[in-house]
Image (cartoon, rainbow, N blue to C red; front, side, top):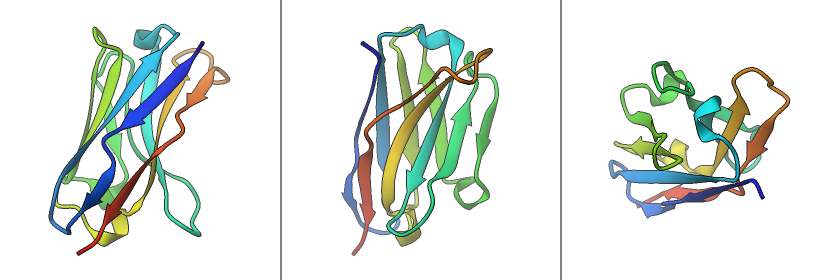
Amino acid sequence: QVQLVESGGGLVQPGGSLRLSCAAIGFTFSTYGMSWYRQAPGKARELVASISSIGGIRNYVDSVKGRFTISRDNAKNMVYLQMNNLKSEDTAEYYCNARHDLFSGMEFWGKGTLVTVSS
């Protein structure tokens, strides 16, 4: 059974850090590009960061550049999002996404992990 399981969310003060993790289960992880999306209350889901299947290409939304880092470990079937210097506007539900390199219709989503940045 295919699963993406996120963890690492929580409450953090502005300026703090969190590391999100996503465990990929039940598919050939190394053939999928991985992404983190987020959705704040009342807003559309947005792409935060993505990493290619082998890890050589990374992209970020402008608002997180220099603060967030996406990485993956294909040996462990894991993808991570290191978030530093968090701001209140980073508060959102964060979702892990997998999309096949060749067949974009083969796509999976996790259930999300909540990040709240507040003093």
